[in-house]
Image 1 (tube, rainbow, N blue to C red):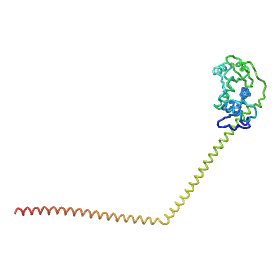
Image 2: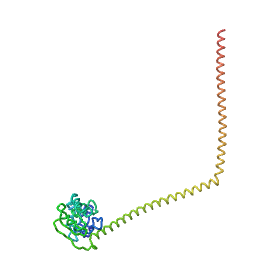
Image 3: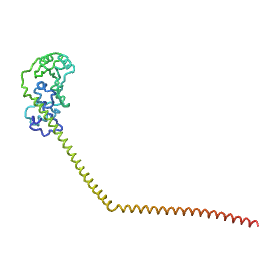
Image 4: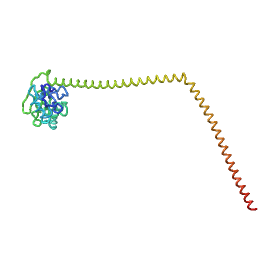
Length: 295
C-alpha cells in the first residue's frame, strides 16, 4: 500500500502514467506455507523496497513526494534481474535430490509484469530442506549460489553463514500473506456483489416487462369475454339469418345465370338458322338470274 510509504504524492504525479506497485512483500504469494520462513530470509530487507514502473517515477517521488521514511525503489525498466541457469538447478537436484532443493522463485506466485523485480530479489537463491543440503550446494563450485534452509538459515558461497532462532509466530511475510489472502477474499466479495447487483437489475427489468405483458393479456382477455358475450346475446341469430339470405340470393343468382345461358344458346341457334336461310336465298337469286339470262 503506497500510503504506508508516502504522506502525499507530488503535484506532477499521474497515477495512470506513473505506476507505484507497492512493497515487494505485497506483490507475491508463497505457494506453500512451509516455505514462508525461507522466503522471508531470502528477501531480507528487500521486502520493504518499493516497486515502480520507471526511474522517472522514482525521481518524481523522491523530489516532489513526501516520504515518511527512507525508501529504496526498484524501477522495472532499470533493475537487473537474475535467475539461476537451468543446468545449475538440475545439477543441484542431482546432488541432493529433487525433493530437497527448489529455486526460490519457483515457489512464488506473482503478476508476470513484475518478474524483473521478483527475479532481482529471489532469482539467485536455492531453498534447501536442511542445513546439510544447503551447505553442500553453497560450497560446491559447480553450484556456487546462496542457499537458504526451511528454517531460514543462509549459506553464502563465500563461506558466510547467517542463522539462529527466530520467532515464527510474528513473521512479517506470514502476516503479509494473510493480508493478501484477505484482500483477495474482499475483492472476490466485491466482485460477487457487483454480479449480484447486475443480476438483480436484470431481474427487475424482466419483472417490469412481465407485469406489462400480464396487464396486456388481462385487457385482451376482458375484450374477448365482451365479444363472446355479444355473440351469445345478439348476433347469433342475426348471423344465421344473414347466412340463409346469402344462400337464397346465391340460388336466385344461379337460376338467373342458367336462364341467360339458355337465352344465349337459343340466340346462337337462331343466328345460325338465319345465316343458313340467307345463304339459301342468295343461291336461289343466283339461280333465277342465270335462268333469266339464258332466256
